[in-house]
Length: 128
Image: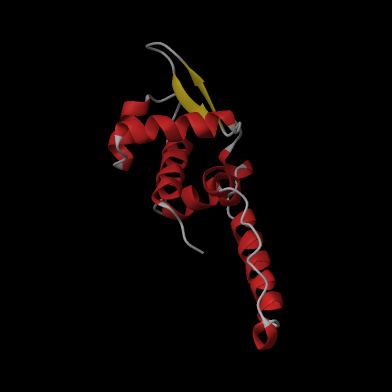
């Protein structure tokens, strides 16, 4: 699986929101996650349109998670930025059995990313 820079930035932004105590401004997300500001704005818009985050304008506004961190899986974020992976073209002749292996690989990948939530990552990074 290849993860684009957009997806890496989106995951970082979502984790920043998961540890925030309330609404945070895009400038803070961009600065703390080292995301170019305009790129950050585009990613936040994409995440908001997908229903993963909420936003409010104004000095007391900002961005926050639309659901608790324990209810947002990595797969949810990756689907927003990467889309749903399309089936590969059929393998010819002797390589045809590889189609089953690729399907199993995608299935395991999806299952793992669907099980890991933002809360799991935040909890694993907190000192004991």
